[in-house]
Length: 247
Image 1 (cartoon, one colour):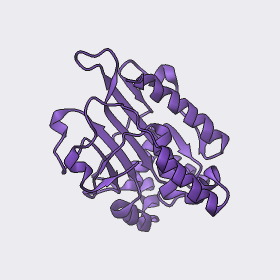
Image 2 (image 1 turned 135 degrees about the horizontal axis):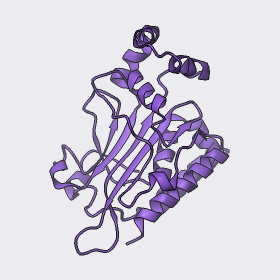
Image 3 (image 1 turned 120 degrees about the vertical axis):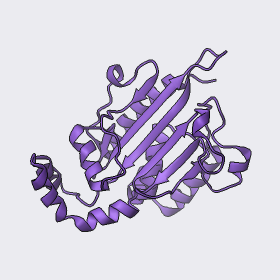
């Protein structure tokens, strides 16, 4: 088995360098000494996602605390968390739990608007400001393109079909959940996020012409490899025949 722990750490560093060079990400906050411990590699995450409040409020709770790995160019941001164990009888770490999340900017795309909200300390005043963005709150509360990909190797967290070990959530306050056939590295996840949310930037990153895009995708699909990162298979044989997302 590959040294998964060091591969994930290397991939995070390489991905941050790559996308900073392309000017697609800003404000990276990954520090290996702080964020890579023996049993975990994780971005800042001091604020838990609260499904009882609006997406906009969740976004700014994390934004205010700097709870992200890095921001994208439009002030959206990415969180990652990989947790490791050494299974009985083995001598190398495997991923026992993982979460990779994309928090899209909820319609507040100007730096001035975000800065203005951050400067409001009084809760009532901030609520008044939120009222002006009620349309955005309603839209992102029920049909946002917030994405979270989860893996959990603990047996109690698994129910075949209903709660696969590896699955993806899209949107807030819904029961959307699809099994996923690959636990992604950060590089895989950010490429997926760009592909489904920023296709023009994704195309500029990979190719110049439409013919090149088709050629690139054909090559990518035919040469994709998946690292053995976990103790258990991500999906059962039955789940592989059911609804799933292929990464």
